[in-house]
Image (tube, rainbow, N blue to C red; front, side, top):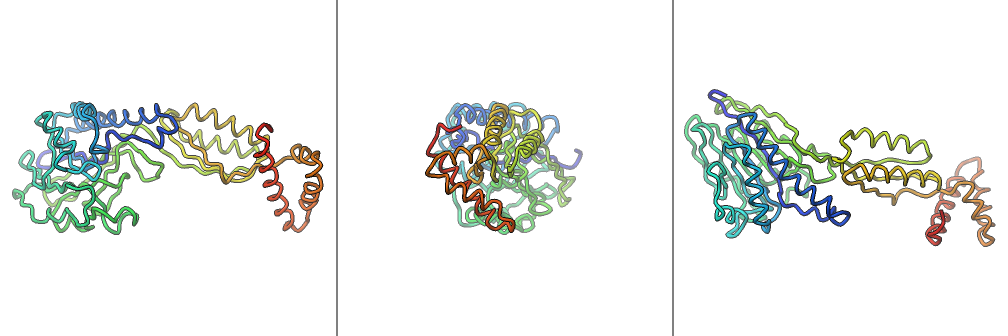
Length: 382
């Protein structure tokens, strides 16, 4: 790009993330998620080389903790090797620039000349036309807006000014995300920035004409927030509006799905929803919430269906606390055979025939509860 600049904006790699909640289910699955984060960084390097960008900017939380291992630090540097242009890495709230941190350890290890650790709020001039203005976090939590320092940073005339920060833009994110590390929503205008590259929010999100969150390139939560991208940002000249393109890079896909079940036919609709997630199946992590009421036969078919999909997906979690087991006629006959329940079950079955519907609903619920309690006390019942 003659006269203009092109950068790749990423954030929130959180290399070394433990995925403890998933490790509780299956430690191997958590290990695969950790390893994929480094492979996705390698994919980012490949894209940067293909697009011939002027720099890759990573807006904080490169690492998940301050205690990340030396081996992981070296593997991270190795993942960057696919792009020989400048990498600019900013400390975030998970990896702040403390006196002893992953950043100081990397410096002691020795860095390739094209990898820049932005641990101080000082402009970095690249190619005589791109000025990167960083606002690193030097503590995990800041109550003040550390990006205010960008307003006073001087850069050469004609250089494209790009801010790099990690935090929460007030009034643009959920309230719980805005309590710490605040960033003024008009920071790009105040600091005369051509683009403000942000990290901390894990989904891709535009805040203003010149302000974006890239989101994590490798999704890590059951949220529908457009994660799994990097942003290719092109700016023709200082003062020109940025052109921003999402590029998907994520390997794993995290989903939430809800389904109501009342009869056997509903299982077909559920399977169709699972099929619609698309192949390859082993890239999917699904949190499935089921509600409704089903009889024993449908419940057995449901378990078979879920077992099949557990073997296909990387992870399948199923919540069934809102799914009631409804006794069918055979199960009710079984309960009636028990002398101490015969009269109660008989009366509830009579109430189910109530033409106005009021008693029918109460009886239906009572039979569900009665049968569920009986099954709980008889674990061998099938």
